[in-house]
Image 1: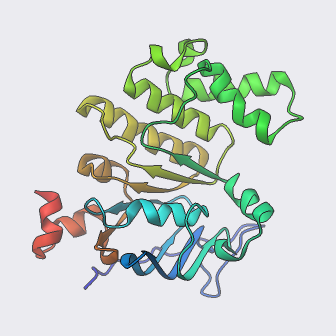
Image 2 (image 1 turned 90 degrees about the horizontal axis):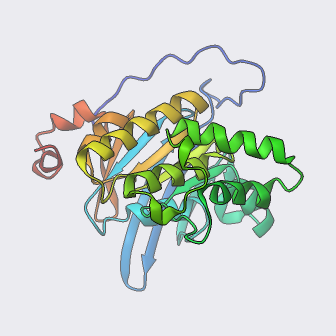
Image 3 (image 1 turned 90 degrees about the vertical axis):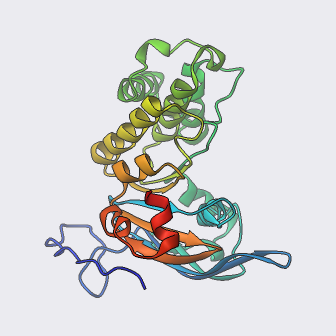
Length: 266
């Protein structure tokens, strides 16, 4: 049984806010009845969850529980067999290729590796998405954004370095800067601290929080790192064999008497 949580009282709506019938702001992500199988192997089973504006939602689960498949479905990299995935109010499953790309521009995706282009400098890596999606942006504005993002991640001096000259943690920071340079409204993090030492993992977690607060970003974090989950999560959902089996704050789930849930917090 999922832990009960108290709902915050919604503030009075400001001009331009989209509200649900209950008077609360419409979720940035709303997933209903989503199932996905690969051949005879079910990966997701009747998933239902929401992500609110400005919220960090952490998805916990062991390897093979369906976490990465879930976020791939949110951006159309995988197609669910059943159910509905609404991102910014639009059902991803029903969108045309053009409409899907319009949604994707509003979503940032940070891969485990950082996925930098090895043959490009840091400046060129950050400039690339701007040239792709904002072709008419003046050079001065593009340069300003590059330096703003490098300042955000504390790597301003790395602007003309190659990815191979950077540590794993620095590459992760540059990957985050490149993703944020398009000002996404929703961030999807796939194991953002994997392969990093404890100190660097802490720095990346702090950076995720800093960016959430500075740019009012909604985020979904897939992670095995409980320290990262504790630092970043407003709310946690736990996946077991493709099903959501628990939901709540870190503190609520840490107190669970369920043996499987408690094993994550030992």
